[in-house]
Length: 609
Image (tube, rainbow, N blue to C red; front, top):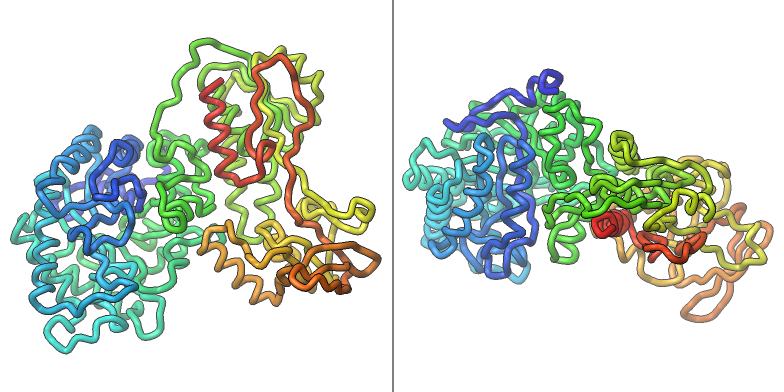
């Protein structure tokens, strides 16, 4: 309830614009715009849906003020010409249907490029200042309540601010000059009553760059120059520091806001604020506003649920980095591992006919199918051995506990749906037929694959390790399989004084893992002294050894080990087929993939039933 989080629901002013609460949806690239920078229905609905959830301020994603020269994302929106004004009027109209929600937009220019950029002449710099001001004027005309300048993440304004990149010996070598001139020029176009905020690099996280002492000085200068709110963020440094894997702690970046306070304007804390209690703590001690990025991607109703005392029904972001992989690795539209509605903001509508649905398996796919089918009015019978399925194992390795939030979410949601009936235990075909289903969904997941069937007693499947059924301490361990499961099992076992090696059949290491998470995991392996030996095929096992083959030379070698752990991969598991029914196989039972795929398929089948 609001009373439980008084700081979160306390109004605050950004300049002369009052926000109804302290929650901010920040600029997160979606790739929902067209390549020419124009908006789409999908783009507009994405922001309208976040507005409906009750957030105080929405800041539209990084938008080009100089298209295409200044763009840095393949499907980046633009606000640099009257030709696009109607697009932004449309968005402002849809967001402002929710009258108390305020709307901003992040104005940005990439600056330098990987393939080089011409030296910025003073005349070109003045031209860029004009473009920022013109874009701000367009936003105001379109109905926006304020604008934000992108002054972080290594883009143009950050480049002017940082001693690592600004080596000029003219007046523009004064690090804050560009940002100050932009602020003044926007005021000349829009008036000082039109708020301008800045996402500010207060620490570059690089030697020789902006540090927190400098960041505090810059923030104070810019506040005095007229910026109305400052998001305390990072600059030129590693992407891992702003697109964190799930292993990072909640609100770890909030100290950046704390260190630049007090200022004469509000300061917003950024980064991995997932739970209302954490948000409230940050507001009490570290910042004036909390930025809820991936938090509101995973659940656009986060603020509304907190206000209504329904925190237990929040679908918390688990930090799986599916959104980052989609946008930054694949250059495609954003998606979410927990929320299948991202980019498809439709409502779940009642089914034309109530049916009895049997769902076998309670992993992410089965749980999502049960949720959607029940919300559509069907009578749902959910059969399972383990509530959560593979999620129960996935949350065990160090830093993976947030995956447990998804299990909690489904447990809480399904417990409030009276038409969901839980059947715990190993289900038989007879058990399923006893409920007389009109449709059956098989969501039984996958089972570990082990080679060398005659020697399986010498190989311990990874799931027995992660379940705690087999304890391994102070041993020489060989892990067969260098995919995500093998790597995370190795990191888990490293806690128990084991000496570990991983063998992998191919040369590619974690090729399907999002790049930032991949880098984090490889660094963990290096720090823990765990080698991955590539191009090695497992041949056979014996007491105290394994035989492997070099896939390039064909040579065989013996590796001494006390324990062999099998993480060779998974195979779909379908325990039985029920003929004569509307029958669906989803998730890993269909094809072994990841959480996001299972949740999406569960959602889709739930809609079709």
